[in-house]
Image (cartoon, rainbow, N blue to C red):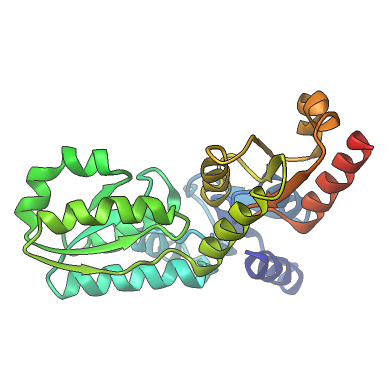
Length: 273
C-alpha cells in the first residue's frame, strides 16, 4: 500500500507538465485520497470522453478492457496493482487457460474481485461467492462446472475460505485450489486476535470501505468489545467507553496511514488519562 502511495507521488513530481489521474481510489482510505488530490493527482470515478496524460491503475487492479480503453485514448498507463492482487489475477487466468471453471471467493462488488473476474471472463464466465450460503444457492452451477479452480480475494477471512472449500470439494469432480489470501493480511488478523486476548477493548482504525479493515473488526467483535473508526474525530462518539476502560488495544487495516494511527493512539491517551 505504502509503495503505491510513494510511487504515485514520485510520478506526479517527475511529470509536472502532465495531468495525472488514478482510476478509483488508489487505496481505500479517504485521507490518502485527499492528500494525493492536494498534490494534483485527480481521482476518477469513470473514464471521461477526453483524457490525456498519465493514468494510474489502483492497487486493486483493473479489467483488461479498462486498460485498453485508457491506452486507446492516448493515456500513458502505469500499473500500481498490488503484487499480491496481480498474483491472484495470474493464477485465475492460468486456471482458466487449463480449462478449469474459476470460482472467486470474495465480495462481488469489491474492485479487486471485479478486476480478477474481468481477467477470467475473457475465457469464460467465472463465479463469485462470498459465503457458504451463496455456494449452496449456486449448487447446480457448481455441479455443472465439474472441473473447478478456486482463488480467493487477498483480504478475505481465512475462516470463510475454510468454510466454503469443503462444500465446493463435495460437489466437484476435479478441484484445484489456490489460497491467495495475502500473507500480511493473515498475520495482521492473527496478531489482532492475540492482542484482543490481553485487553478490554479493541479499536480498529481504517476506512469502512476497506475490506481488510472491516474484516479485522468482524473477527474481533465475537472475541471482545470492538469499535471501528476511520480517524481520531470518531473517538468522540465513544468517549465514555474509552474513559471507563483500563486496557485498550489498537489495530489498523493495511491501507491506514501511520499518521492516522498515531493520531488515534494519542487521542485515546488524552481521553483515557
